[in-house]
Length: 326
Image (cartoon, rainbow, N blue to C red):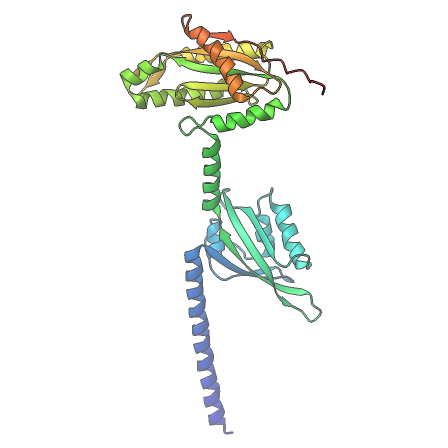
């Protein structure tokens, strides 16, 4: 083969190699664009070196980093795992590497550059082994699940909270009532607002809603963490206290609630002054939520019938029925 022919073949190989590089680069750009459009990040880990190959820019962007700002390495990924999730994520990863599980999968949180939290569904499996059967490379995907998790949390919040005031709704109150019932005796306060209808009639329902929101904030400010504040609907509220009626904390808090209700409310189109009638009862035994509410309601109406704005203690809970021998 002549030197001229050899040079020509080398030149042809260089052109062919350049063409293959362009094709590979084009394919990678298309893959990156396609993956970015789906919110999916494709990655490959070289286990011995810890180097991560990220096939599209989604991973860094997901954590708030600019291209090439974040070093693609296993240690960097590990350091950005949320502290509360790190142990179980690493356990899931190493269980797969050690052959204990057929693949690696974890739904977890990662901490972004600005401190915010990103939810990630991470999947992968070993795709290359050395001659002795030891894993060399793991290939997998990250997908950003933050929107889905936020939506899930919103649904959970709606299931347990009043949409207007953010207080516990009837469903949440019933669940907490049943949970407290298994522990010890406690008390509930049934609150019905006085003259609230006048606010709606004179200032409008929008102002009435604003008043309820402000009132909920006042309740939250004075109630301790172990007291549950909820809205049953309309202008009716229910509070579950961790104490019985005869304990001083119960009456003291009930008076505080009465006082903050009577403080004037500054609304967009005027000032509103209302009051509250409060019925307090102890809860014990196996009494149902509905029956306890009925006793508290009766106590509350004794205030309504005697001038409104006050506190009344209702009848004690019914004694449990005696066991009968067969």
